[in-house]
Length: 217
Image 1: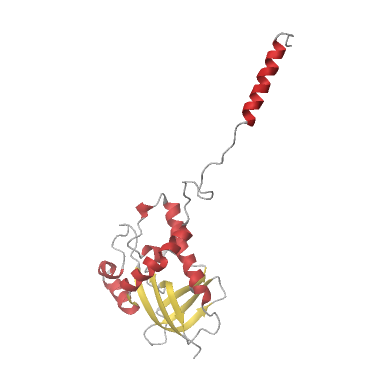
Image 2 (image 1 turned 180 degrees about the vertical axis):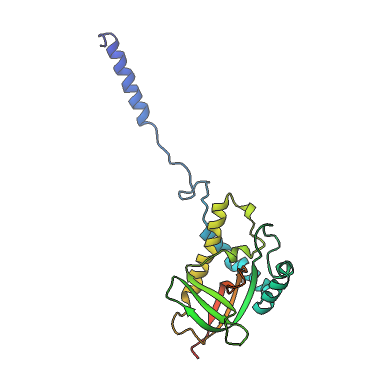
């Protein structure tokens, strides 16, 4: 128990402490959202910022006709990579090639979220490549085809992977979601995109950055 002499001193100290607290302000930690100097990793915005200025011009300059690229890729992957691929890729990563694909749709799967079109590029009536039209798309071919995107520019593998997925999401939002989904067989198709060769039994899976589908025949 406090005696009668110490009680007034304690009360005075308590009131002084309360007064000092009321004179203080609690300030939020600076962040990107409230105008601070911090910056949050935003892969979607990063892709949007470079898409028209860098990604499309690069692919337009680098891409070769699909038949030519694919034939060279099977015969000499390193030569195909030097001409149509990303020579700055990680040493243990597969080649990814920029291509222009023109042909006709011979089959389409639009019931799945991972929708695709099979394209006959040489006029023999058989599919030569499979084009992803989303919204769900496999792989990171668009990211991996670009020689100005390097893994070492990212903090970790997770950020690098999210950045790769952001390319697919942006292609879907700006291009692929606007494509027709009905009665695709027989229509002409033009695609600018990229693919990573898979097993010999699978059709090359092309991820588009640009795509056009012609009218019904």
